[in-house]
Length: 270
Image: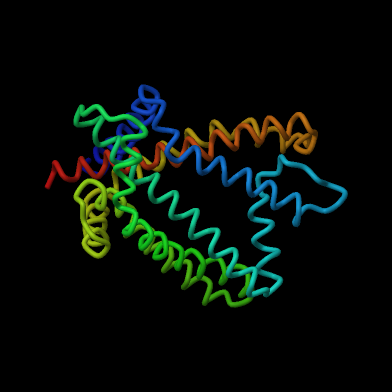
């Protein structure tokens, strides 16, 4: 019964996150702007390098994945370094944006009025710790990516790496919230994140379930277009790309808001 209540609380928290975003639409700008800019960059890279000459289109959302795989297969160390730098910079921008979004959400809950620019400026004060966390975040991501694409036959090694990656990701879910709300450094933030996840895991799973369901509903038209074999018709591609762009901006924003609300709920309980 307790598990069911906690699961329901998670669903309710995720629902509240959507409502909070609806009432404060500017919150989507924090992650929406860098994610949209990155998607445009991925499209440009794809059209310049990855797309076959017979199929050049700016509306293929797998662009970055295709390009990354091609780069990994090339064993070009200059490419690896360039790719690493691009992704670390992007992770740094997302980290600062996530700190700002978390802080703004926290201020809304506390009924403190703060604007978009003011909150973003204040978040830049955590620039050093954001750089450090972006680099730490990039390491397991890159190891997992390289293992997946360069060790296709080493099933046990890949399984071990994926398991470690998922475990690390679960432990560090609330690190940004700990850094922002509790003003902690990296190691204490990881410990705080682990503590929060241990006490809120059922609520977290319930929230993820609700967010995933909403994402699936938004994605449903694209899946239908693909199933009826008109996915590559230009009009369908444009429609699909718009939906994917909305989804890629909306879901991370709601996810960050939800984590902030769960973190605050855990603080109340403890």
